[in-house]
Length: 184
Image (cartoon, rainbow, N blue to C red; front, side, top):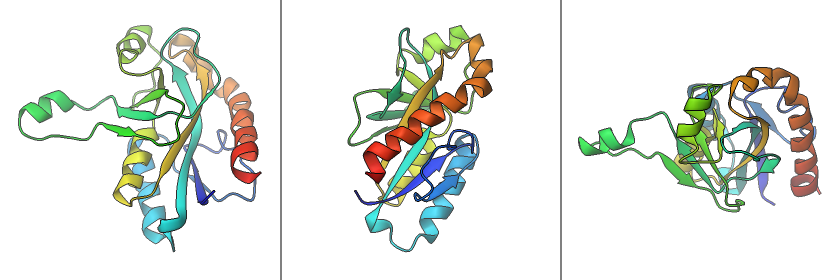
């Protein structure tokens, strides 16, 4: 595999990333992620041999969605794409990600803990996160491949508020995936 840069929003989600892999903690949300990844790519000595791996948790938008996913598509769910496009300002609100498993993730700055909001988002994707789209967009600008590795931590409802208690198990799954698929 190419050289990798592992990007995680929080240290807790990256707790089991193998120490030999370079790790960037970008912070929570699209703006923090976009700034941190852009800075890292702008100063990287050779992005032509780099792949960014965004690891972290995601909420499940559909029933019985559990486990680890490598999404094939990432959407930006909290931008008014249709309205802006109708006024002549088209925006990119979706990236196809090579090497994915067919799943889709919707990214937005809202921490989804409301079943009504969850159900609206479920029409577009099976997972929701807060950084994936911004990371994919920064990578696209630098022509660097990007892959998302997301572990379901909650059902994007009121139980999502228990996220801090669930993140360690998700982080272990991420560490195991990296050991099997990147380090090995």
